[in-house]
Length: 257
Length: 257
Image 1 (tube, rainbow over the protein chains, first blue to last red):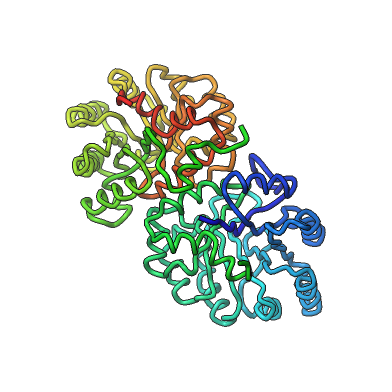
Image 2: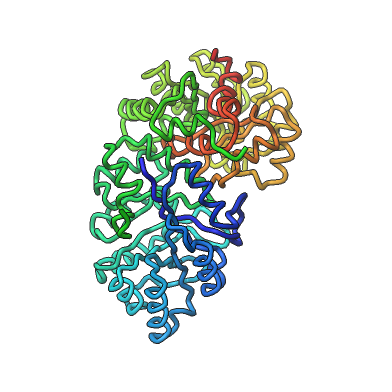
């Protein structure tokens, strides 16, 4: 099975980790050992300093086609329509196809579609995927999607249906019913399987929503992506669905063959 | 060791390693976590175990009425007796009643004890004197005691009793628990955590050896397979992995490998 990891990062975050990837070669060696062909990667430096961190990321992954950049957007970059427009141009200029957006305590972004309308529509028009990460907090605790965010997420996805949204929240599966409701209502929302650590959650989502909105995400080096390789390999779903989740769904969104 | 084990690579490739005994040290029956009738819950659990190569699972109740809960555990385990190992469960009660229940459970074939800090009783501590007879009972019959909310000082104060710290791998950054693991040969950790940091199992093996680490998933709350993946993902020797996956708990319970 081919694997495309939707979520890993370089550098040292403020939250506790036992290991980190200082450089792209270190990450690539880990991917080789686990059996991951490609990864979407961001840089922890960008959590505090978007411009410097994103630049560092681009330097690190230059001429490494297995690594797809994901930029972090910081509140300052979207503080006015003009700033937003410039940021979007910068994204396009750098050929970046994934942006991470963190509504949790780190950046306090609002997911209301009217709050950052120009930004969300700009991403949709450029075919750039929005990553929404509820997990990344300074403490990296058992993050969950707050109850009040579900209708806001739903409104965002339905009001801007061309915007592709990928959710990252390992405790999401504690609310697996809401998750499936959102996925069924909003076909432009996807979820990574690290959120599905509850009993038979992968099987349940596949059965009720299909495999088309799931993808493989490991969140290295916080967590070990190899555990999710095992989770998917042993899931009680058809092999064709496993391959979609492991590689094809994300590759298709990013235009990777 | 920088590379993942042959066992991981075989399972990641969809193969079943030869002669690999896997025993999940931490699971629940009778707690209504799945919302399914017992027959279906047991059948689904066995289906997952078969698909992922898990030979046996330790099961126990966790909740209010401990006598009723132990009956439910026994009922579930009896539906697939070759696959499940039943432990007794207690909440705080009169010492004579607790010992009588342990006797009843032992006569019914139970071989260990589970306690949970959230259910044990308001204001009750595991250091309270009322538990002394219970620890002595478990030491006498070589019953492991698995505790959610384990206090490492228990292991130090009761060296004849074997204590398993449920979700103990999360304590890799807790100085008191780490120190107790270094000093107390009767203190074990299980790996049933959704927040196991990448490298935590390797770190634990390096610090304490592999003899007192146990694979656990907390099924059916958690995905048994993802939690097995946490152990499989570790960059440790095959021999250590075999101990953690099943050898250690087999040794504690006197199961012939």
